[in-house]
Image 1 (cartoon, rainbow, N blue to C red):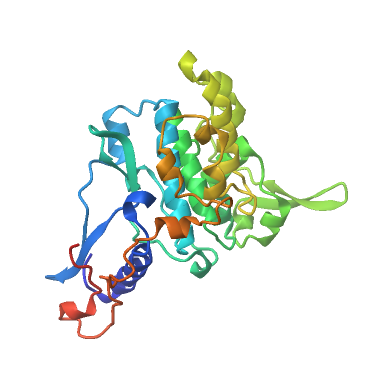
Image 2: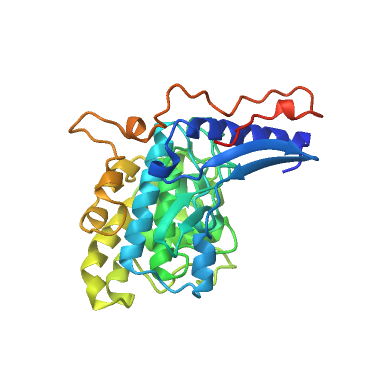
Length: 343
């Protein structure tokens, strides 16, 4: 990333996110470990741990064939731990997608993954209303409508990712934001009126009309609409139970999987499942595949009064943070770049 005025603020934002992540144990929390940050010949540079390949590359190498449910359980469980860890330090990733999920060492540790790329990560409350974030195919209703955002946007993206791992194609797809909203409405229904009333972008997708004396919202019809976006062979998520071929041994897991998807893809971010709740969902708990019982101790535990933050924190309280807050001073020197020395 070049060291120019246009890029400096975004680099500072990433560094601030990385500073927060230093409070966590990267291994237990399934996030990438950063080793160094420095400035060299016009570029900001970050040095991260060496990982294998992204889930996107893995899926592409296998012609996007659907993954077995056991593999999806493992991936979702690890990422739920990662999202709960981020929440514990006040960070929202904002760009959960296959490209940003890295296999650690697939040959030795099948489907052991870590979350990477915190370039646009930030505190959710600081995201300006109406900001366009997330990849188009995993853009949440609240982002499309221009509502205030919370960390629930990451759960929506994770739900889209889980569906794609099972289907081999994107659950929602299209060439523009209208296509995305239309495919969401066709599969999941229309967002609640209170969300539509509050969205600053609602009128791009919906229009108001009178119904039984009350004004309500209705999705606009586009002349460019050809009905080919997303999983157009699905009328609802329940169709996954009958329309998607699976091995007989996996049939018992499909019901909990679909139930999990419904909760992750709740149109209302206020009632969408949280990472802590997801870790206790039946799809993840009714199996021995995925993170071990020791790793599951990273989840919030009401029984023993522990929190994920205390379990996932880097337990070296005497070690000074190796990243320093950057200052905009001499732009011709490395001194203005927050650094992380090799551990």
